[in-house]
Length: 125
Image (cartoon, rainbow, N blue to C red):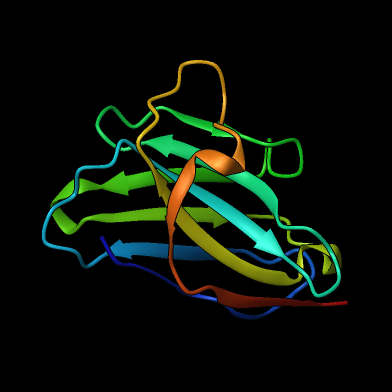
């Protein structure tokens, strides 16, 4: 499994972005994809996650009400759309896969075992 996040860039406050997480591996045998973000000097934090087979998604508080995580299994791609972006959303966003299927919320970060390269999102004030 190889994951690659893309779609980042420079956005104005209040704008939106759609990030993509593409699995370029030969076999997709994971159950979920999580989105995370990190700024220098701070711990990585979760944004949300999705069960890839049935599309159920869960969101962390920072993303609730302004984000949608979706997947296109034919393209082996998971998307994160974030609206109403704020300067504090500036970070490197990355995705990771997990073997955990969840019905209660996103698995802990320790359950994610394959990480892709991130994509920089910068929100200007």
